[in-house]
Image (cartoon, rainbow, N blue to C red; front, side, top):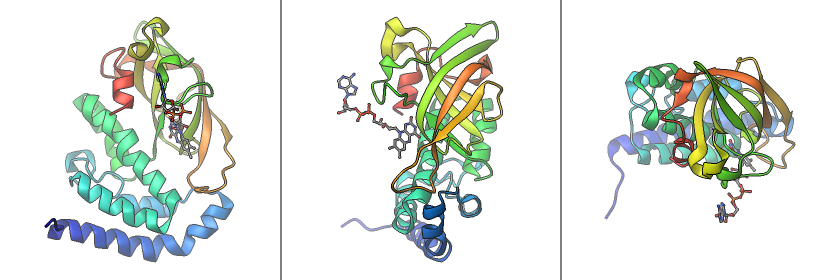
Length: 236
Ligand SMILES: Cc1cc2nc3c(=O)[nH]c(=O)nc-3n(C[C@H](O)[C@H](O)[C@H](O)COP(=O)(O)OP(=O)(O)OC[C@H]3O[C@@H](n4cnc5c(N)ncnc54)[C@H](O)[C@@H]3O)c2cc1C
């Protein structure tokens, strides 16, 4: 029979305690106002919940996938918004960088997110394309030691507040999925414009918005993996 280890029981119980004491009392208020719950998210980071599977040297808790799922389940039980923010930071944002990033990229772009000091986001979807990313309209054109990004992304979880974005752009449309490349873009990069916030029926404290790229110059060292590996990274 399967049973949880002491370590797994400990993380489950820590997440349950935190969720019931800190999230439940404020969840309805944040859901109604649609404000991002910065304070509880910071506290979750301090407890290691924003990078549960990330090794400690990159700011995470160094635990396994089961620990992540057990903690996420307790947070989601209290409030889906906190759960979505947590899952985007842990998996959508961090996984691709951990698997395809260089040592320097992991240190620079994972550490602030996994430690909960910053918020990460993942931008694949566009107004005309979701998981069928080979049809995306956004473009990354190489210009010397930079790429120039242009296009529009939609439904970006944490888009209005994120400090770092993993961004997927098409380099060569003829190659469809194999023409997509991935980049990490810092939130204050000129040419990255946060668009309108989506009015949702629920999960409202997890802010979702459009993101517009207008001649946004990103250094080559911010590309994850090789050119054309973006779709693989997106599906990691
Ligand atoms: C609250 C919320 C938060 C979100 N947050 C994010 C976010 O942070 N980042 C982000 O990028 N997006 C985000 N999204 C967008 C979400 O990921 C997309 O809406 C989702 O991918 C659906 O895309 P789709 O419409 O293409 O449908 P899908 O479900 O992806 O596709 C529709 C169907 O077409 C099939 N299909 C796909 N491609 C092909 C193909 N080539 N050939 C044949 N069949 C195919 C699929 O298998 C599926 O059955 C969010 C959406 C919501 C509602």
